[in-house]
Amino acid sequence: MICKSDVLSHCVQQTKQKSRMELYSSDRRRQHNQTVWEKFWEKQDIAAVYPNSDRIIQQMRELGSLQNKWVMEIGAGSGRDGFHLAAQGARMIFLDYAENSLKLISALAQQNATKVYLVRADAFHLPFKTLSLDLVYHQGLLEHFKDCSGIVRENYRVLKSGGFALADVPQRYHFYTLVKHILIALNKWFAGWETEFSIRQLMRLYQHAGFSIHHAYGDWMRPSFLYRMIREVCKKFSWVLPLYPKNLPILHSWRRYLRVKIKRLPIAFNTFMDIGVIAKKAD
Image (cartoon, rainbow, N blue to C red; front, side, top):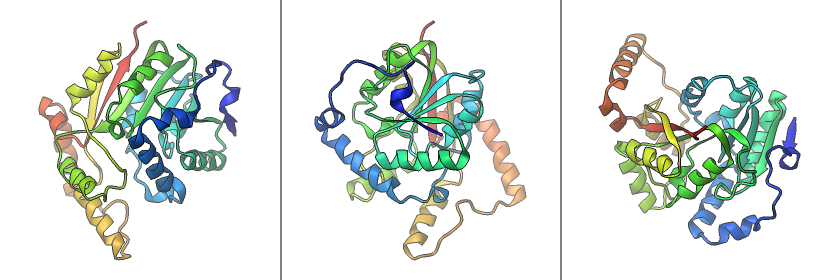
């Protein structure tokens, strides 16, 4: 079941705001990113898009029960993590400015017979009341804006006291960053303009908005960035490799053992592909 934003009487901001196009018109980069994502999600085969492993779901589990909690994903994309949260009892809101993203989520919700709320809006001007949501999160959003502090401040505003915000972004000190910026310079990067963060920079961003840091986390890319690069090159020649390479049991076990050991070291945050923080609004 798909629910429109106007039924969210508990959460939706009633005051009149500027039009969404007016909000976007002041920043050409944001308009460009909008076009990029509309094209990306227009005819996207969801089975061909890598999920976020299970790192975000694992982080959410540590925050306690989501039963009847108002949870919102900002910049929802495919929304796949949110369906897991809805299955745990969350009142799930998907917010994106790309209409094609919301169309995809709508189709998935109908397939899964899952009740969700769809909202098309600007992440810098959320159409929600102050102190109305229990948890907000986004993955792969902040890096697409030169100054994303406004998004974080909006996260803080709409959260209830004691609520949590989760941000998941690419980590700066990685080979991925070098390759990405070369492709951006050549106008070949699939996601348009993009930046990245160190874990200290990400934590400061949330602290400056008034949050306290509950904890930070990170994870490596699975499959590896090298395999994904090879797979993309092969697609140019109509040779489609599987999403994941076949694992050799002994090698897989050894790599898993090393990951567990390295994750405990502070230096690990300079090796992760993706990093994130869970921040808390004061009670």
